[in-house]
Amino acid sequence: MSAVTVDLGPADGLGWDDLVRTWEQTRGPEGCTVEIVEGIVTVSPPPAKSHDSIADLVQRRLYTVIPEEWGICRTLGVAVPSRSGLFIPDLVVVPEAVVNEPGNYIPAAAAELVVEITSPYNADHDRLSKPAAYAQAGVPLYLLVDCHAPAGPTVTLYGEPTGDVYRVHTAVKAGEDVRLPAPFELTLETRDFPVG
Image 1 (tube, helix red, strand yellow):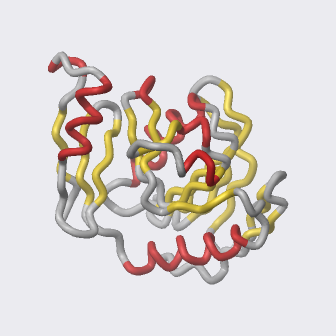
Image 2 (cartoon, rainbow, N blue to C red; image 1 turned 90 degrees about the vertical axis):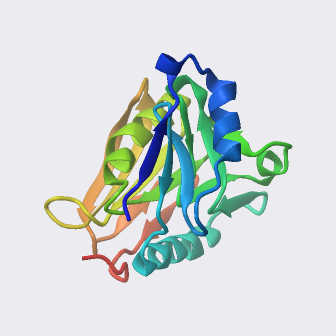
């Protein structure tokens, strides 16, 4: 199954509120992810088991270093209205106070770290559209586990957003360590990531 898209962007005269309303009303099959990417409502099939394993490994390591008042969410909507985007990252580290506010999503600017793990049907979004949106929103760190990179699985940590561009902090082949800077101060071992 590949991703299904419904283009409801500016050409159709719909604004942010209309996109969000459509997103809220779209029900994909169980396990599927519904996102807005560049003004297009997208329904992606459930990821592979290895995808969840990677998310679980990263989440377990992050819990050892984050402050008590922060949480790690797997199904939280993260909005970047200026880029017509509302994403469901694989993991997002965010203060619990923000998560507990009313609504169905949080502003991306509230996130401390976003983690995306590619799937065959969404890899381009995770490599191009999402980092540009997260950078523009000012998300300090973006970790991309690219299981489907053309030259083989990679892990890239982006930071220091300027405009819609990140600086690459670290780019390694899957299996090598990635160091997350403050406030995490974590060496993330990727040798157990089930990629390839």
